[in-house]
Every structure is written in C-alpha cells, then in structure tokens.
Amino acid sequence: MKRLFLVLIALALIMPLSAQAGGSSGTGFTAGLNLGSDLLPNPGTGVMESWSKIGFQPDLAIGKFGVGLDLTIRFQLYPTSSSNPLAIYSPDWIPTGSKTIFDVYLPKILYVRYGLKGIDPLYAKLGSINDFTLGNGLIISDYSNMHFLPDLRLFGLQAGVDGSLFKVPYFGLDLLTGNLAKLDVVGGRFYLRPLGFMGDSILGRLQLGGTGVVDRAPYLYNTGSSGTASLIYEIGADITDPLITGGVFSLTAYVEGAKEMNSAMGAAGGIRGKLISLIDYGAQVNYFQAGFIPSYFDANYDFYRPKRYDYIMATSPGGYVPGWQANLGFDLFSQKFTFGALLSGPFDSTVMDTNDVTEYPHLKGTVMLAEGLISGLSAEGKYEKYFIGRRHPFFQDLIDPTDAAIGFAVHYKTGATVLTLDYAYRWNPAASAFDVSSSLSAEVRF
Image (spheres, rainbow, N blue to C red):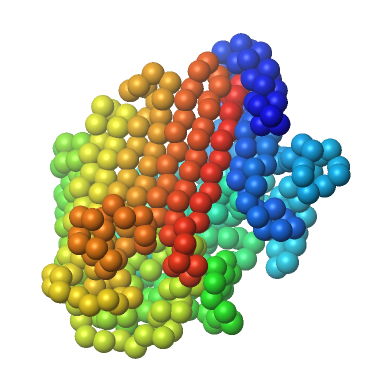
C-alpha cells in the first residue's frame, strides 16, 4: 500500500512537469527530476530493503566542457524499523567506517568532462567510468567503477593528452583512477611515436607504449576474503600501429606483453578495426602463463578484486597456455542498434577443474537499443561469463548464470518523462551466491 501511495505521488508530480518541459532554451543547461526506488542494504541490519528516492540532476554544457550533479535523497516513509515517520538513507550523507567526507560528497558530482577520448588531443572525465581501456586491453579492458550502483557511486578520473596538442606528435599519456577519494586503482599508459615526423603515414602512426597499474587496496570492497592485502601491480609494453585509417575500412595491428605481481607473464598479438562504419572486428592469439589473468582490471574488477588477489598471491607461474580471442560487433540503423560479442579460450580444451581463468572459454556480450528505432523505448544489456565448461558442457554452461555478471537497463520515454528499470545479477564466488541490485525510477528533463 505504501508503494502504491508513492507511485501515485510520483505520477502527480510528473504529469504537470511533463507538460512544462517541451521546449529547450538552447543555453546548454538542462536539469532532471528523478523519482523512484532503489534496493539498498539497511544501514543498521544490512538487510536489503526498498528505499524511495527523489533527486535533482542539473547538467551544464559549454563547448567541450560539461558538468552534471546528482542531488538525490533516498528515504522510507513510516519505516518498520523506526517509530519516526521518515527515515533518510544515512550512508548517502554521513561518513561511516573507513569512508571519508570525500567518499560521501565527491560522488554528488555526477561527472565533469572536457573533450572525448580518441577524438580530442586533450580529454578528461571525472565521475562515473564505464568502459576505459589502456593500450590493447591486456591489462585494463573496459574497466568500470559503476559496479556498486545504486548502493554506492564512486568518483573516478580518466584523462589523456596527446603531444599533437603542442604540435609535438611524438608522445602521449593516458591516466586512470577508479576512486579519487581512495586512489586505490591507479594506472597509466605512456606512448611514443618515434617516427612522428613522418606525419599521418603507417610509420608515423607507430606507437611504442608502456603500461603500469597498481591497486593499493585489493580488499577495499571485501566480499568474503579475510586478513589484509598488500599493494599489487601489473606492468606491460606494446607496439601498436594503425595500418589503415578511414571511414570505409580501418585496420590496427598490435603486440602486447604483461607481467603480474606473481611473476606470471602473458603476451598477445592481433588485429582490430572497423568495416564500412557498420562492423567492428578483431582477432588475437594469446600466450599466457598459468597463473596469469588477462585483462586483470576489467569491467567487473571491483566486484572480483579480493578473489583475484587471493588467487594470484597463492599461485606460482606455470607452463604457457596458447589461446585465441575473437570479437565481432554490428552498428546498425545509424547507431540505433549495436551488438558486440567477444569470445576467447585456450586451443586445448581438455582441462580439469581449476581456478585458472585462461584454461576456460570466456564470453562478453553487449547490446544497445537507442531511442528512435522503437518509439519511446531504449535499452542496454551486458552479459559476461567466466569459466565456460567448468560445471556443464559448453552450451549448457554458456547460459548458466553461475560465474556470470548480468546487467540490463530499460528506458521508456513519454514526453519529458523517462521511466527506467535498472537490474544487475552477479555471481559472487566468495559467497557462492548471487548478488542482486535493482533500481526503478522516473526522470523528468526540463
């Protein structure tokens, strides 16, 4: 009954706002009113409960610069655990445990950005990070600091500069940290173009890169590991050359090697590119030492970091495992529908039960439906599956959510109002159970 009461209040607020929000001032300023509910742990008991929310999200864009704020209050009316008629979700406003004031209040800044990676010689983004890659992805691939939403928003940094900004096209630098308040995961790639004086030629575009990443607190988001953890690191080097550039066909060739803290090493070489602006493709050959975890810092790293730390600290390097990787993606209807899949695995599929991820096939898939193809509807989904074939035959294990991370969001727009359902379902190996998070909201842009 309380949930129905809140929905009626939300609709009463949304309808008049929708009627007012039809025009745009063209000044580069927009704002949103967000109403809905999140599934969150009770601050006192840890039990998952539904919390209502109301938020104001102003957004300002001036040229390449943009900033957005997230001023959201989450609450319960007449909570069963309290005699007060209103309970505010205290972790959003009061530092507890190891959290500092920066942990709590920096995430109120949704993002600050300047420029775009791969387009502008200088770019920076502070706030949520969802797909950051260094080099060719052997160490960091699609890293995200958004795993704990809606419970916890992290405030990170991704930035880069290319020497062409200063008319010295011989070097460049990309930097990343997942959490500026903690400076836990920090990484960067420095690259040289030794033949940059040859301009936009095959040799002029040749890059020699070096990558280094550290995690100062592998147990920061401890999900079952005990004890304390020391700093871990991974270093690597690559040779990368965009052989063919252009809108019709592009081709980049590369080789990359890396060494993890347990002295396990890995190497990869391959090609990637785009065909007629519609098809993304890639093919790679791997040579990983037992105990080496490729793309150690990936999209799900914050969730699996304690388990990965325990594994590499307890595993000595073994023999090398040759493997492969292939990816294919489609960009259809003028970017209204995109789909991508990456599949990798060892050449030798006769493996025993082991915790070495390189001994099993691995799948990562994404799909995105943009607004416009179906009136009012947009959506995105992700599915990543580790250790395919460890529990069941390949195709049966492929759809078994164990050892998988699944997430999707569906948005429906009517007028100026957007209704959103966001859901995540992830296997937690430390607890041998699934972690579930969900969010339901209505947003009005004006």
